[in-house]
Structure formats: C-alpha cells, structure tokens
Amino acid sequence: MEILDGRKVSKEILLELAGEVDLLVQNGIEPKLAVILVGNNPASLSYIRQKQKSCNAIGVQWEQFDYGEDVTTEELIKRVEQLNDDDSVHGILVQLPLPAHVYTPDVIRAIDPKKDVDGFTAYNLGKMFLSKDFEDLASCTPLGVIRLLERYNIDVKGKEVVVVGHSNIVGKPLAAMLLNRDATVTVCHVHTKDLASHTKRADILCVAVGKVNLITEDMVKDGVVVVDIGINRLENGNLVGDTDFEGVSKKASYITPVPGGAGPMTVTCLMENTVRAAKRLNNIT
Image 1 (tube, helix red, strand yellow):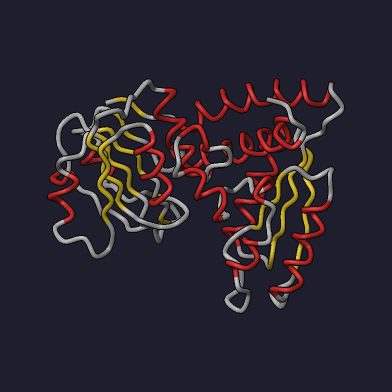
Image 2 (tube, rainbow, N blue to C red):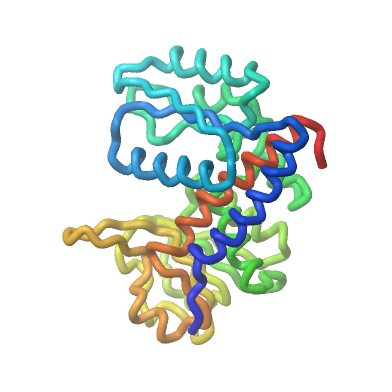
C-alpha cells in the first residue's frame, strides 16, 4: 500500500507555478486573486488562510473584501461586477457557504467565466463536459484528484471508477473529468441502493460525502485505489475522511490520507487556475 501524498505533490506543483508567476511578472503581469468573504465562519476562515498562504508562496497578489452576515445579494453582485471590470484582477473567488438569505446562484452567475478560478459557473462547468481540452478552469477539488492520480502515474483509461457523492462541486464534475479520460464511471449517492455492490467493483474509488466510516474494508476489492475527499471532524477534534482508513488501507494499493490527501490539492489547483486565468486574460498560451 502506498500513500497518495497530497502535501508532497502540492509542494511540487506550487514550485512549478512559482516559476510561471516569475515569468509573468518579468513580462509586467502580476497575477492577482480577489476574494470575497462573508461573516466569520471558522471553516471559511481556515480555508481562506490556506489559500492566502499558497498565494504568498508562489507570488500571486491577494486582495480580500470582507462583509458582515447582513450583506445583501445585490451588494455582493455589485462587488463581483466591479472586480470583473478591474483589469488588475485575474481571479475572483467567493468563499462559500454564503448566509441563507443570500441567493448564491446569482452571485456565482455574476462572475466573469474568464475569472472564475473556482470553476463554479455554468459556462466553465459546461465547457468541461465537452472534452479535457476544454477544462480551462475546472472545479478545483476534482482537478486536484486528477492531478494527484497523474503524479502517481495512475492511468484511469478503461478502469472501473466509482464516484460516491454527486454534488455540483465535486461528484458531478469529477465524473465528467474521469469520462474525459476514458474511465468507465459509476456515480453513487444517498439514494443508491446497495452501495457496496458498486464499490466492490471499483478499480478506483473516489468518495466525497462527508460521512465517517461510510466505506469499510468489506466494501472494496484487493488492489483498489482510494481517493477519500470527505472531511469530517470527530468529537476529539481529529479530522477523518469517509473511509475507515485502517481497514480499507489493508486492501488498497494506493490511498489518500485525511488530512493531507485531496485537501492540499484543492488549494493548489486554485493557484493553478489563477495562473492559467492570468495567462489567458493576457493572451499567453
């Protein structure tokens, strides 16, 4: 069994991105990420810190706009539109979740697809379904999973891949990206009958649900590659994924740890998208 080390791969990619940023700066282009944060949700604050740290590490400029919980949908859209028109900004990120009274789809829809570094707009999601050649700004967590598999030379072509979870942020786009690479993909979710009958067939199993010990040792076959994208905090404060790591790792050929697997890759792919957006906005291939 080998660990799919997201922290290690993340560092390698960030180092490469830092070189790309240096070249852009030498050409008078300073990549910049603008971040909109509403309220002080502890998880959101933690994610924001990680993203800012990665920006600092590779030389991407960071500009943050903080709003109180009482902000309106209209106010956020107005800020997004200002950032769309600001040529110094190459990436726009709205930290989710937003308060319940804010209509999130309208805020996301307002983002210029060329600056949508989270890959959440319908335009970028739709392009991604065409082929891997159009994954210009793909959703960061699915892109992170693909990058992790690539770095460990795990070819998905022709493999039986099971994705557990069908969210718009992870499950659906990940399934599309795997199909783009000629995997045979099954998507399971909360309404799937007999989940184990599907997971036992998987050559590669990707789980993104948010349920502790959802996948146990008896639900996987020998040699399976497991990418655990779930994040759950136990009562003792420890973070765990959706798989019973101790049991499943006995059968797996590769497995991601939680934390330190898919998580760091998500932030790194946000940086990759920001650098790519800066290049595309300046017509650099």
